[in-house]
Image 1: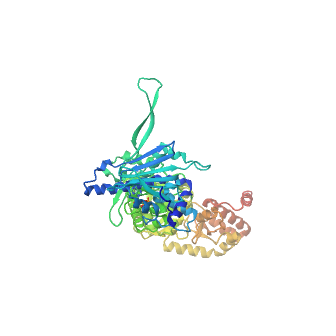
Image 2 (image 1 turned 90 degrees about the vertical axis):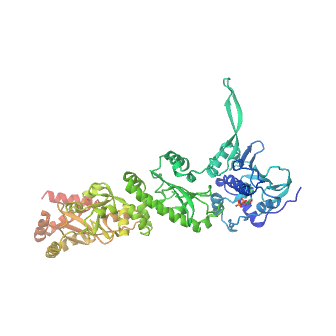
Image 3 (image 1 turned 180 degrees about the horizontal axis):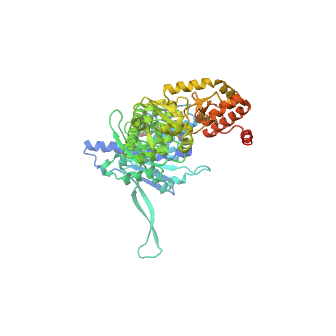
Length: 628
Ligand code: ADP
């Protein structure tokens, strides 16, 4: 028997990591071994193109997987190029041969999981499920075959063996079950089939299994017999590599539901290929509905990442920005190495180029959808629009160029959704602003006194009914040179200079009365004054400064809010009969003026959807006046 050799120090560390790895990612061992087999067959196939001695044709190459429950083994056999004794020694005795795996000594447990789960580390991953691994190989063109054998940490042995077919046969002796882990499942044909489908469906060569099943014996009732047939498990040609004209809508949809856990049809698929500074195929989908947890903090965005048809990462978050986190699908690039670690990948230039590319593509496709299929786009926006708005908000507008054109708001014209671009396009040239109003619902906004005036003037208002909306308008500030103006803010004033001057004079004349009213209300308001902005309604509250009434409501509903207050002014309709009444009371009955002031302030709060601060006091006041 050959002498047992020790693994090199680095290899041993990695091996320990494999042996003790956590359970969830163990299944990727099969992906790694199948990819190795496929690579080995590629090598022999390429050789066959120039070397007539290779008698194999393209279709002769295959990977065979066999399960043996009695002996607890899985064997993976390929007819690829094989390894010489020396190659077995260097390839399997030393890790980091492929060079792309940077092993960090101080790796924390968390990192281990990432590396193993997301990328795998080649051949050694076999030790996650095996107590012993045997590799027998005959290299093409050589006469002697070799057998490599290891039980893990102890080291490995290499000796000659009598394999006669060119290629490699790997035998895994599956670990015994432990209390926490069930290794038996890797000996089940259905498990193995599932793992192959999941990770290696698009390997270019057939992966075959001896499939055990039973069938009815012909002519005999209730008699079944067991039989075994060879089955090819993988579908080989990736859908995304097929020609678009050969793919039906149904193919796309089936692929979507098979792979992305969504049983409703996607809204749209985006299938394209890029060649240039980054070469890749992408098949992306825009779902119809948001997953239930889309707006939760546990939602994980990401696209599947393939390297030449082999899945290397199930959810590569770096490929899509958060605000396009709804996009599902995959990217397949030849430029990425299979065994790249997560950290390296994050800094990968190729990946960055691809991600930038994808973002542009999604934006273009959404813009097209908005133009060509308005109904579809609105459906999309209802599901994911909030995320786009948060995209603007969370990045303080850094991505406005990507996102602002994609926003929709309800218009006061027809209660339909309108984009900012459409709004600007259809408003008069003289109009310098984009008018909006905030409230819980469009109906409530319609009840605001300011809305009345704006509508009377024929202005189109955007209804902002989502808490984040107003923050978005503040961050954007303007769109195509038109400023966002809240019709409940002090900036909203459509009067002429003459009208403004007249109002100023009127307010000046009555400033003592307003000072008295302001004194009654104390800190609750910053000022009391007349306005010419109201029509039917007697009063309104106007916010002064950056915090509007709606924002105040939102900020105060957040946990740990510190009682944010909008600066409010109480405005009285100068043309309402109440105006004259106030003047009269100021001249003759200041006590009653104080009561009226309290009541008017409370009314204004009610109209704005704010709570009345002291309801019992208010009802007493009203009753006092009623009985007079
Ligand atoms: P990687 O595949 O990243 O190089 P592995 O640890 O999986 O790392 O494999 C190390 C090397 O062993 C491979 O690069 C390849 O040269 C060789 N090898 C592994 N499996 C096979 C196989 N089935 N046939 C031929 N060579 C193989």
